[in-house]
Image (cartoon, rainbow over all chains, first blue to last red; front, side):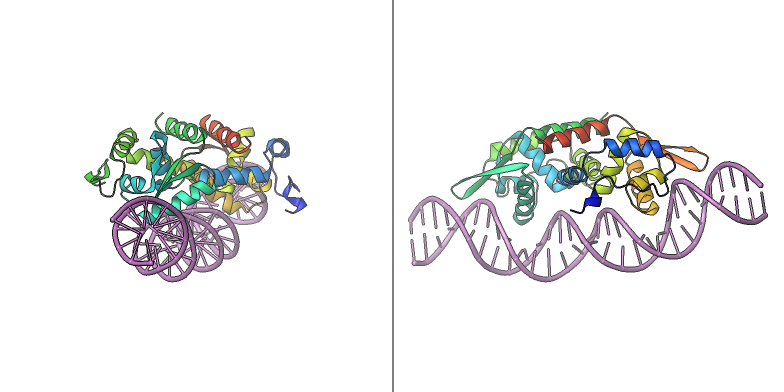
Length: 120
Length: 120
DNA sequence: TATACTTATGAATAGTTGTTCATATGTTGC
DNA sequence: GCAACATATGAACAACTATTCATAAGTATA
């Protein structure tokens, strides 16, 4: 990460200098905002959000998620991997069956928040 | 939108029938989940989230946003259009200058929520 | 070990998306 | 009207992403 990545600001084209200075000084670090975008990316796909929404009800195995969403096992498995890598869900194995569940309460809160915004 | 779109469920391949029935009965409508995904899509791109984060501080004109983010005017304008179409931001014109600001408090809350999840 | 079953994964593909470039639209002051 | 400035927009392109298909990996049971 280059040193110029942090709040470099040469004022080129700026119209309201004070506003820009203030706003920039209040920004979270670039890296945080990038992580934030990555987090929300998980919720930005219908298949993934449907999976997460299902898991709010209960932990579920891959076959059940696949059936509930009327999708292919492969598609679900791929999306589960993405969600797991982002640490939004976790898995446990019981014999042949792998159960997935939400990693923490934040997922519920984020979805609830979004629903609230939409249905206002 | 086809009639089969709502909670159709033929039980094909299901392992834990009760769990699936319960989860499906608790799901928000398909359309709501799709809208939810669309909402979060806005926050899933670095440029857009940086814009939104800037606007938390203050309303800003296009030129200032462009300078603050070290981007091209065109790129910013395109993203502003997307955010406006999603009703996350609004604009007012003052002469040549167009000022953008957050449409409501929800944007702040959603970003704060996300940051909390990341920095825990 | 052989078979059946559940889940995971790699490659290929089609669809989506963000940026750039060029240019249009809208506004002010002369 | 015209020049200068701020913003918007359309087309083209590159990069990314979700799904499908085929198949592998892991597990239980006979």
